[in-house]
Length: 130
Image (cartoon, rainbow, N blue to C red; front, side):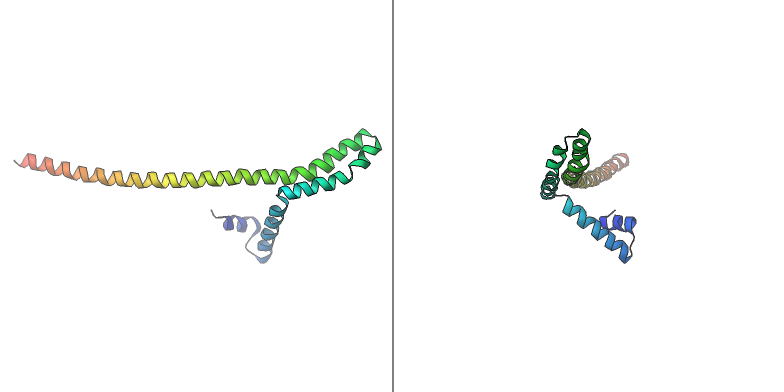
């Protein structure tokens, strides 16, 4: 199944469906970069002094969990997924090329086998006719 078929299946083929696909892919591609991870880390660090200055453990833990991790980990996960997907795509392409070569060889071997069978049958026919 092609990616455009998957997009239609998820969002539909309407103008709104195409827009939703375009917007989702645009945001994912934008957010899924290490530069956005660095930007989000910088934004998160702006509130770190206030969290530490409060002296309250719950505020510090909340800053780590809700501010830093949520802002920074999301783009890093997307980057990691993109790296994994690129490796999967390369493997799939290599597998496809290998299977295509194996198929070609199998077809050739089958053709050779059929030609040998014809020769053997002809030889048997000649032996029995003598």
